[in-house]
Length: 308
Ligand code: PMP
Image (cartoon, rainbow, N blue to C red; front, side):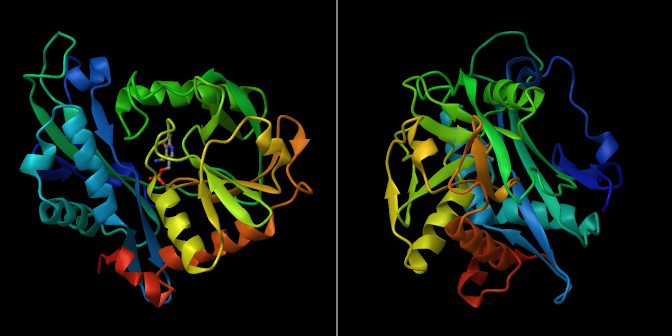
């Protein structure tokens, strides 16, 4: 596994050694959380000696939407081709030949005191990090968080806004400090929405159920992928609200995200989910997902950008 300190970073329009990419303490985004980011995985395929970046265009689209939301210029200044080229250059120059986590970050770069979104400069950076399994993939134990997900009329959970991750951190730390692996987060009305950094699915009588985009969820790219894989493999899908106790009634529960991949949940609030082991549909979708991201399924190769 490589070390971030040995990689290159895109910063202020140039590719520089990681340690040279530094912002001022007065940077607006550092003070007020006025930025947004992406989390993208490159997956190393040992047989093909190839690194495949997963769903780059979807990540670019979500970043561009966040750019509009936060009154930034990223979506006007940076085309998909530019974005793709910068990412490929950073990864190639860093000579990454293993799994990699790619973090584009767009931020209000003005050194200025003043809480607002308008009339500020913005810039973007891309750095790399090693990231193994973000949570254990063999089945995790969760608790319902006592914190609530930020609502669409507070910050919006739809994109990855830096400031809103303080909300995720509250839930995640509460879960970890109580001895759980991850938090199940509810919205202001008490409906189940997400993990602290994952979208959530339950399985009931063979149907996969997940909250829809009117709920306070991140518009997750792994979620979108799972829905497509399920559809293509004849697994029925429903997008609707999920009450807290419905997860205790579910046959299966799993979380998904770029970091978490597809992760079965085997217990919530001291109640076993199903028989307390990873269920058949979560296990099937997990395998399909792994094969997809490594480039092993020709049908889904158009979701991958080869680096070399
Ligand atoms: N929800 C939250 C709050 C997240 O931080 C993430 C991780 N990006 C996800 C869901 C999953 O999104 P994606 O599949 O796009 O990584």
